[in-house]
Image (cartoon, rainbow, N blue to C red):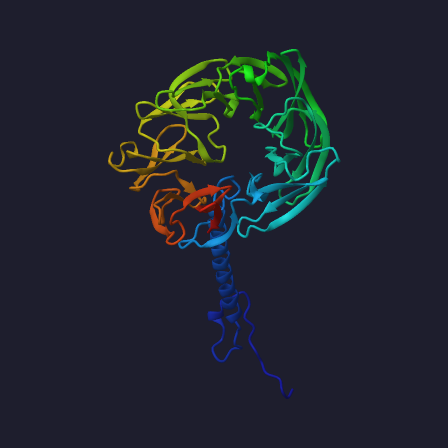
Length: 477
């Protein structure tokens, strides 16, 4: 038949066995294209994963109070406020949020302050009953609740440092610091209050002559009473007839501690575990795991006797003082550090007081605690750097092992933005990598710190200066 041609079929064989001669061209190029796209996808995906991991590492401490905004190599003034600006006098840091409260007739204005601009992120106005003390002359306070991003505020100047002579009917407010949402508000009589452990604690007093009896009440964040406990009675003579004593209420790690007229009550699980008597002009601080630290108000070289009162009832006196952490992420709350003479840093178990380790060295001030590592400045580098040189040192909080030490030739407290450790060198910041202490480029402060003092106010690197009768606080970054 015309147009027909005999062909030979190849079955189950190699193409190499096919008859020779022209064959139809097989299109294999799309396999290469698909492979190329796959390789590019893997490369892009791999880089994205690396970038995400790097971002997680760099920002891992951004939510820790006291951690600075990232410090550029050449900081500049971001915003400033005058010394007589009272808007920031009540500010408190709740995680990464800086929140301040302003009193006004019939309301509290609570706002988050943007650390980069000084402007408001959100503002929540809470109506306050007419008889509340919010006439603009008082200074209300806010305290982190210790759960999520919640904070509690009280209308009127009633707090750990301001205690009226009798109970005041006080309005309490709980908000979410992340967006300003009002969680609850209620009124209750009290003489002092605080917040912590996910709740609000208040103290109420009843008097009979010169004797006062104190009652501790705990509220949840919705304003419902969860516990009430009568602590006991103590002599309360007129202030003019007695020495000065520390007074206040603190809550942490499930413990509540109240101090009045030299009596200190430690409370756990709704019961008083013990009562401690301290002398006048003595500071009382609640630390981790129920530890109570007592020390003289004027802690000098000849009055450095600090008392450590542990939760198990034991007490230890040390010649020195506890270290003050300017930044603490809570990863070493089971350890308490003390600077003891002669030139020794000592670590003890915060619950029992048992010795964990000691290192010869002379810390120069406050420290940073991040991811179980303590960062501090010292005058001798703990034997790692020359004794005549000041150094920044990183050591394991639980073992005392020195991770790294670097000479700085300048003193001052360490500061961090979670990416590096910085030490003030007046016209610059010496910078060291957080993880291994590698020397990083200095941060240039030329023109910013002349006749000024540098501080880390509420997680903001700022410069405080005075001219005549005026003062200025400039946030830099």
